[in-house]
Image (cartoon, rainbow, N blue to C red):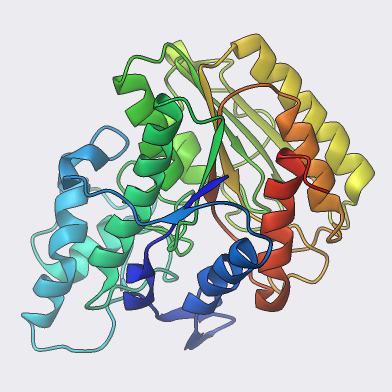
Length: 343
């Protein structure tokens, strides 16, 4: 299987506001490096750098003004004389009357954010572009006839909505790839999110569309981040009604219950009959993950990959979460090995 990877991800690293304190982020460069090492160890296939794409390719999944904000955020922040990492200060919550985009960077950071977990530093824009370009290169490989490809994206993307960043995510790599596929002539695409956390950003982007089916298997948002989306009654609106399927699962979920949900997802995907499948592949469903509470084990990821292969659709895997760094490489690559039945 082809893997697309850029070392530019190392340019982005940061802090987050968690448990009442500013601390080093769980989302760190070692995540991608560990996965890459395992890709090379098992000789999964060729590893290539992403192709170059103009930032206009991100528009469609995202708004033009949001992409422009990300591109300029660090310069706008440092122009105020600050050199620390940029984090938002205030958010436009319910009851505040204005919906206008602020002019000053502090206001913009809150306007375009859902949390204080996505810092911006000098290398963030270059890193997120390389991440999105990895997904674009992968979907273009499918268009040329590849059965499957793996975009080793970092930073991840599935919490980034049409006009907001959050949850370590800035550009929604999976959504950008799905949008590219549609623009290249695909009639229908499916996005399957198997990260522990609900892909709220992907849902936001496609919620009113019928050409992209979004399916997410995740921890119950009543007790799990992102808390405010991912419930089973969120089915889409307008033309998108019925094209959004959320399957929240309880704490302690193990393989049998997870596998049942995955097979149900496969049935929905088969009914949609997509030309391509984009898998937002998080392995924070692992029993040892520090910010999740499912109980999947390392061999289970082989089984997940086998099930995904049975869907019979050209598939782009896009790396999302997984924060147990010592195990993330084996677990992520096991999905890919299972897909290729190399077990």
